[in-house]
Image: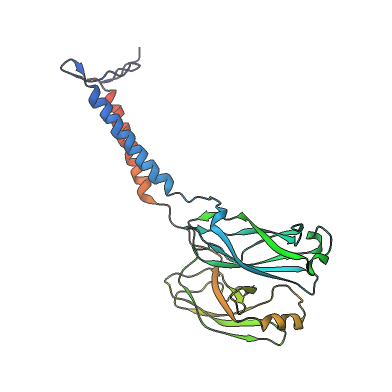
Length: 299
């Protein structure tokens, strides 16, 4: 026989009697209260956990253009926008070139040039189609037989992470280099209170109608981490493929009428795991344990 002071082991739960009658209403009420508390706290707990839902409908391709480079590469320049309500970690796209007869001619993939993309924020991309990506093994279909490029979203996971917001671009100016590149220079200022990680600048270049026709990104800026209150210089050009002919780049450069710049950091900010739901969950579990342990005591 196994005995314990004040407790009878291996004995079924015996409800407390009220004048010789089982108080079922009180028992049921306690269980309802505890259940509601648990459901409420668990809903807070799980809703606060960052998710990785891929919602392709939250990505929209705003505009794109194409050309064949001197390297015999079919180049597509485009711009996407996060039209959803949440941040997107990064965007991966597929592209299919269609002919006027609506026949698929080539297929490729790429990733947009920005990470932790905010709602309504735009990001440029470049998609390269090499001859191996063409179903015919050449770009013969490009001359007069090209209808459009059909894009698909491969990855667009929502995230709670975001880029360090206190980085400001100032004193930017542009020029056309002798090699044909459209170049933008300026400074990045850390207006916040934290030290940033590695930085680089992404540029989107537009024609007179507002369509994107070129993009580029800088090297990592120096110093590797930018202290609060400090600034650093950057240079970014419209080069989309290496070894372009100067004449081709000049033609492209003179079509540029506007540009936009965005600073990217290598280490995004990750929100702290919420403490309140954890505390509430612990409290609810503790209360539940106390309530049910009291029920098993001798009445």
